[in-house]
Image (cartoon, rainbow, N blue to C red; front, side):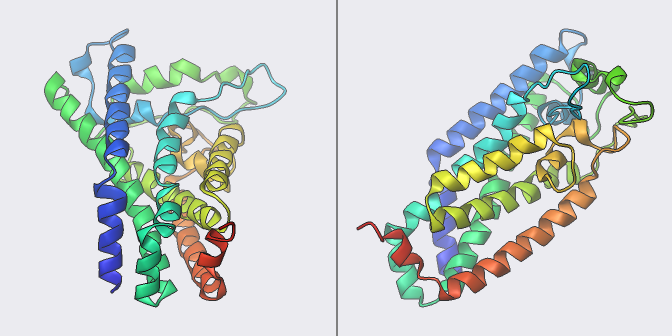
Amino acid sequence: MFCKILGYDIKRGILNSYKGHILTVLLSIFICISFACEYTKFYELKSAHYLDILFFAFAGSPKFVPGKDMQFVFPLFWATIFLLPLYLSSYYPFYDLIGYGKTILIQSGSRYKWWLSKTIWCILRIAAYFLAIYLVALVFCLVMGIPVKYSVTENAHSMVINSCYKADVYAPGEYALLDFNGQMGILFLLAPVIVLSVLSILQMTISLLSTPVYGFLLSAVILVSSTYYLHPLFIGNYLMVLRSDRLFSGGVNEVTGSAISLLLIIFVTVINLMVFKKYDILANVFKDE
């Protein structure tokens, strides 16, 4: 029965989400075009690598130091990339429950199976989003003749750093620029999926306890707060290239971030299963009817 529920969620909540896929592809194309426009201001496009596009897209913003000669600039481009998948995954569990999903939940006779399926769905939905971005970037490289190499060029590194990093606003030795060899590691691609899965599962919980709007707002607040504060507990920091310890001293480590996020996924899932074992989710969702 669990496989049937999960298959239903994958079909209804991912495969049939045509509008979400169209938005994702359009955003991915915009990312590629934005990179090309910025990169060709200084260099030949064919000198770039595949990973340069994602390095540019996931840049975010450098550490902000209040009170110094530094103006806080919200990374809107970065925020759009990471808020869109959370928005796309915010409504399905709630509206599925008030539709045919209610019948599935009753027929299964197990809240565990229903909730676990929705948890896995959250992870798969986020993974599908980033897979689409990675594939569109790959196609863009093949079409434009950009070498498909999993390394960041010195050109792209300089372009991203010079766009917003100002060393003179930091204390000596604080957040200093490190030597960079162009290698980001496989977690560079996996960390966005892992970190956003935490927020997706958390917002699903809030959505079913209240409304999807509150769930999405919570995720947005966590991500937006991360742009202002550089701290390991603000998990949005692990999604920004300009907060990485590969580039700066005192930056965050993606291995640590991924480990924390995996533990949070397990913790939140276990707590949710314990809560919904006794909580009448149907009564809450239909309380106003």
